[in-house]
Amino acid sequence: QPSMGIFAQSKQLQTSGTSDAAVAEEALRQAERAASQPVAAGAGSPIAYQEGQRVLWSSKYAGTVRYVGPVKFAAGEWIGVELDEEAGRNNGTFMGATYFECGPNRGVFTQAAMLSCAASA
Image (cartoon, rainbow, N blue to C red):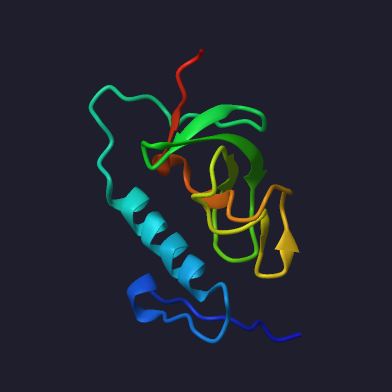
């Protein structure tokens, strides 16, 4: 069975024709930002986020990790977060695949570099 696929840099790709196109473009931008951020001297390995953990997304939106693992829309490990407010982009379902369930516009998929641990109350 022949392989089907291409290798391309994200700046060469264009998404269109789906309702999830804008979200896919943002996911690509997040991945590019995460890959280009230098690691601080003395920094250890990235935080291993776990389901149920409280986090901040983009340094301002509080939420709870609901999914950690691979996704159909991009390579690598992605983290699904249920936000406390309607600042998200989905309900845990993206491009036809359900990764977790939450209210409308309360779910986001992100890379670990866009998250920080929320302060304990």
